[in-house]
Length: 396
Image (cartoon, rainbow, N blue to C red; front, side, top):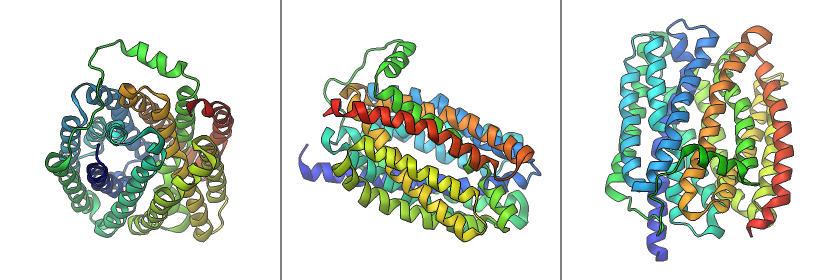
């Protein structure tokens, strides 16, 4: 592909990612308060997060496999459009049970992250994928910083569930604008020889988990996300109880941290990878996540909590792009969407259990217990990361 065409394709894909994640980020910090508007207890608040993850777990392998067969563009058009429509329906949910169902459907169609990763990998030489995955993660962070700020400003919790209709409709608009950008500007760039042969799904899963690098990286993603998803699901409840925060304060905090994450991913990640390699950078990211989670859980004031939040943000910014890069480098060219989908499905599965565990810890043990649980989950992830460091040179 000529450099100019490659550059245009990259810009369009990053814009699509930004718009889609801005809508997603707009909704996430509002979910606890949206659920409380229906008088939902803490365990139902966290299940609202799990419902989305169940759907994502179902959707990820299907969309990743389909995009390998028929192309990225049609899959992205369908999935992103349906995400927008489910946001519209969610805005008018009459009760918490309908909200659960809509979050599940939203998750099914939002399970297109591996398709986006595959589209980016299609236009990127192997030796530049870590840096490009960092740019993709930066677009995620930029969207995730813009969205919460808009959602926090537009939400009106005093009006109950009606106070969340406007931000949800704005999220739908972001998703539909992203789908329109795909229709108008995205071109198909699948590598030659892309697989169209139907194979047994269990054999594919066995293949991924038999690989010495892919298997360990997927396990790292899974166990880290179990802990982090629990914090994400209870964060609104925790800050409300500890600091008296509402949607506006949480939205602004996510905006600041998201902007920092975009800088870390877009500027620092590629440079760290050039110097230390993907595996060592991944290990460093896990260490910062551990430090940040511990700092937040023990924070006496919101200022210290935000410092821990920044540590977590930096750790994630240099951790998860290299998860994707290591899998992309280790997988055959025609199987990248599938192997990336396997990882994303494992993360979605982790996001199912994480909020359930955190909801119980929050209610039964203490509001800070989900942070301690997350910190404990990082320890085995560090052990697996060191095993990846020993094997990663074989990819060169």
